[in-house]
Image (tube, rainbow, N blue to C red; front, side, top):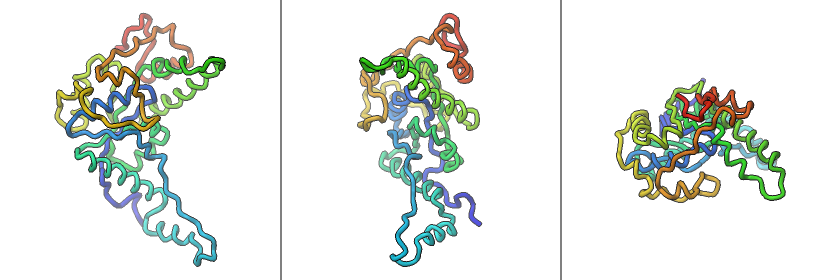
Length: 269
């Protein structure tokens, strides 16, 4: 009998930045990437890369199902092969960066966060939270002229709520450090020091000047590269909504993530 995975990981305790889309993960990536020892990957979306055993017709010889069975007897199911592949991808990225600590950033990993936890039992998690109403705020601008704005809003809010629920689930079950976007944009040095302590690296003041570093090109769909982020200067976030501005459907998730309704729109305690 084989254990789930008897081989040590090439990257035994990578960091994973877990967040809903539109929560500031690209900003945090750029800030962390400025550190001389931290490499944050672009959105590789590891869990969307899989392994499949090929099946050839019988005339090629023995039924190729036997190949899969032979791998299985060696403890290498398609699931374990995927884990080995993901680990190698992160190892390659870390080696190419010339740095020592790797953090994987891709909101869609939330869709299969349990597989990540299975693959890396010693992974470290950064939970990036933002007020849910400010996460979904851009959805109001996504309706093209002539389309049903209400339908677009409904579809997009369902999309964001799915990620927010998964973030709540992962945060409740996994150990890690919670970082709030509101704190990141108002107390950058304090938050950076907390993250550095969590990742066991020393604090570097260069993180405050993330705009001067070259963070590489982002592939389409790999993060928000709007004018605010391209400016290289930290911009204040949207003000927190008042209680009246939070629809009933969002109030439970707001409370679960620590954003209780605020009558004046002030930041939660």
